[in-house]
Image 1 (cartoon, helix red, strand yellow):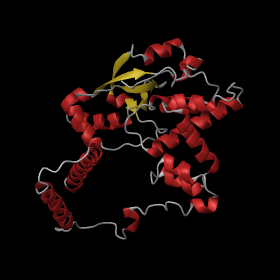
Image 2 (image 1 turned 45 degrees about the vertical axis):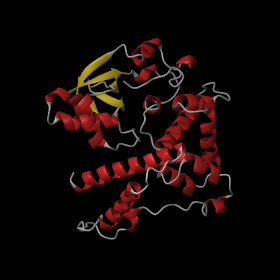
Image 3 (image 1 turned 90 degrees about the vertical axis):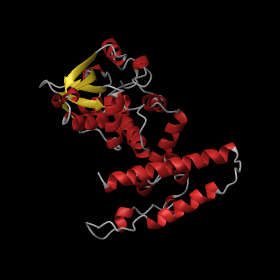
Image 4 (image 1 turned 180 degrees about the vertical axis):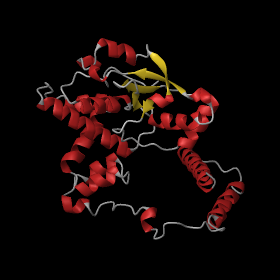
Length: 295
């Protein structure tokens, strides 16, 4: 089940009612037919590594339930768990036991902010996804912009917010006010190009905030936007050469030989940690390449 904290959902400020608090504490989990659940068109979070998740669910089962809202037609719309839902749909094609999904149900009307139905739905999506682990910098940036829009709408409709917006957004995102301060600075001072680079995950929030302190002209010259490999390709289809990884294999063999010839050399903790991180990245990229070659 997704983690919910009372601060993140505004419970301490009275944004959700007591019934919703009970639901968030996991007191009502129901199994819903997977064909009764529809994806949420307002979900802007990254959906990746589905194959790994499928294998994990096969091995250890579903660790977290989905969060949904009930629709008037009897179906349910996703709030959190889009990766899990995508994986479960694939699994349900092969095994009927995945055709019923454990879900917690949230009532959209439990959000007490004076905003539109669409904004209430976006608020629930944002706050219920706040603690998910696989969030990119772009996800965080989009999450922040969504909350700014929602709280601005609430304030324009008479909601007494005062100077509390940064604190509210920090609670909703489960981050520090200082992190929201960086996002505020980016929103108010970054060029559109810099914001686009952040949206594309070309730079981090910290990097964007640092660049945003420079004048508009200089922002374009600092840390130029990386060229994506796909943008350098001129054909629509390619054959995979037999020697595609040949040079990489030579380099990897050389590294292995260096390890074998290190003569039990010792490394300090910091350098050894970096070596372990490099090894893990190599393993991950090899697995990724294998799946791309033989999906």
